Image 1 (spheres, rainbow, N blue to C red):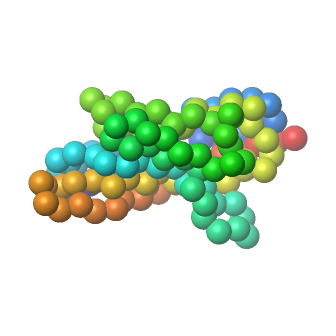
Image 2: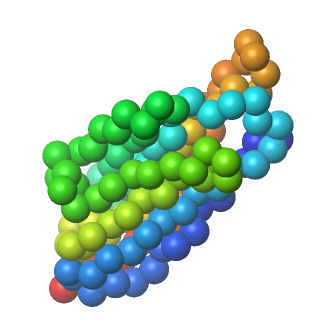
Length: 120
């Protein structure tokens, strides 16, 4: 089965940086869009940033200029570089990917999430 595993979360002081990684494994034919979402306590899950198979990116207004999504297709991995972190960035961050498990079958997958806590 296809699995997404996130890593890199932790506690950081405001203004600091952190890089999250998400590695996909399993019967992967190809990976289309890979994205990062986050969910803070009492809030809805929101899209943080996404990157297509050809490198086109999209970011939430709240993180533009601070966060960067990058992918390594050879490693089936997507990264989220987070700079100038703010307390409001505190949330559980989830990796999401649209993956083709064959030439004709595409599914959407989620990682288990990794906690990011930013102290003031």
